[in-house]
Length: 349
Image 1: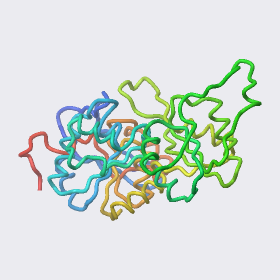
Image 2 (image 1 turned 135 degrees about the horizontal axis):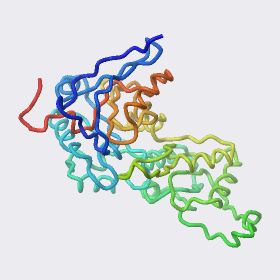
Image 3 (image 1 turned 120 degrees about the horizontal axis):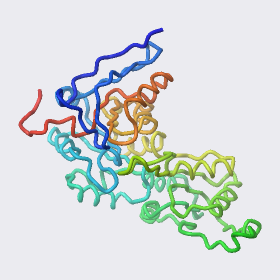
Image 4 (image 1 turned 30 degrees about the horizontal axis):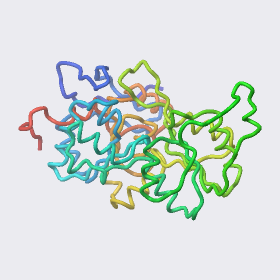
């Protein structure tokens, strides 16, 4: 059986490869649709085709790291794309799976990197910390406390809603070499939920406490996200995300969490309640097929993968070969900057 292929649209530069933003050139490798002829194909976008596409889109949801920025640096060309969409009166939402900072701090970061502060502010941002706090508040744990494994972003968002928590920061473990702490662990009372996200102080003691709190069936188990890694400026360095921490507690407790970040439904429900989006006229744009693309596909949105972060064309092909239609984007582009003309007067209609 032969592979079905499609011819991609012309790249933004017909004479030279485009840097996708992560140091890797974007090539015009045809994107295969897999062994199943019914498998979704992915279309490459350029400024002209994108300008036609946005007529059918009211809302654009952007991932952040690897899309709008990479580490502490702006992704070249991304502010230009955002300004282009603002000019065309599009609704913009930023949805990151990073819960280490609050929405307010991410808004300051966007402004510092040159994004429009009127349109890219706290009120246009969603992260798992905000969704976790909203989930806990809506769950009605009424007066009970949260055992928290997570960074400042989670604490800030729970403070804003008046949720009481404990457990964050380094543990005061004694006699680690002898292992006696394992038999004398001290557990707090009146715990209504265990919240797990990325935390640099995560250790065996925290895993043990979380697992023991979760022995009670009425204690909620909520996770920020299950990303295995996060992108960084050095592609040769693996940066573990919250996923490995969540997996450890899942394994030890024997329980599955309610995960609120992409690609899971709580983040979508949060956005739907707040902005009343029409999924069929919404596009999810991100750099990962297993979170961003799957989130869009699972919730009826159009999807665009940019190659400036984690996943590349090879990952699309692999998903097509494995018939993972839920992780195959509708569209692909090297980066956000490749979707708009470099000169403002070059407008396509």
